[in-house]
Image (cartoon, rainbow, N blue to C red; front, side, top):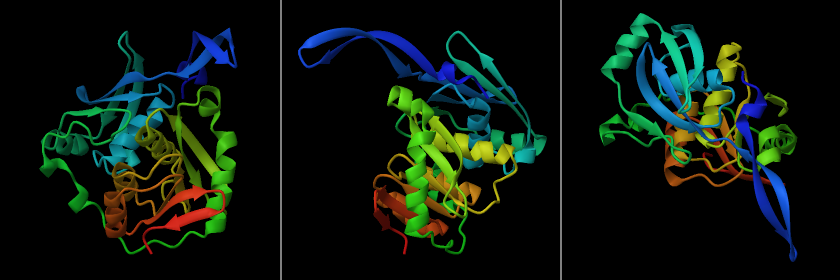
Length: 263
C-alpha cells in the first residue's frame, strides 16, 4: 500500500470568496497513468489515483476474468516510472495461456471501465456468471453503511474529487473502503483488497459513491458479489445485467431513500 500523500498534490490557486480574491494552496487528487503488465505483457493503461495499486491490479485481474482466483496471482510489483506507474503481475502459467488467447488492448479512462474494447464480441455481458437471486439487503443496513461512508472518505475530504467503494458487513458496518478518481478503479481496489485478505467469500454487500453503471455490476458479477448499492441512479443496462446475474441492485441511497431495482 502506498503513502496517501502520493494521491494528493498541492497547487497554488486564487480563491474568490465574496469580492476579495485570496491566494491559497489547494489539494488536488492525483490522476496518473497506471499500466498493468501481466508476465511482461502490457495489457491495460488505467488513469487512476496512485494509491493501493496492488489492490487495483488484483481486483482488475479478477473482475475482468483474467484470473479466476487469488492463488493464480503469484506476485505483484509496483514500479514508479517517469510517465506514471507500472504494476507488474506474475500470474500462473495456465491463467497466462488463457490471457494470451483473449488479450485485448484496453485503455481505462476515469469515466468508463469498458473503453478500448476492439469489438462488440469482446463485451462479456452475455457470458457473465449467473446465480440464483441473492438475498435482499434491508434499507436499514444500507442507510447505516452510507451514513458511515463520508468519514471514511479521507482522500475525498481533502480533494473533493474521489469516488469510494466500500464493503459493508452483515450488520451494515463498513469493513473496507477504497478511493480513486475513477469509480471502477475504486471498486477494483476494494475487490482486490478483499481478495488479498482472503475475504471474498464473506457475507456483505458493496456500496459506491457514484451511479451504478454496467461496468460496476459486471465486476461484482465476476466476484460473486450479491448486492450493490449506489448513491446515484443505475443505468438501464446495469439493471438488466444485475437481474441476469442475480445481483440485488439499489440506487438513490441518500438519507432515508433507497430504490430497489431488481425485485
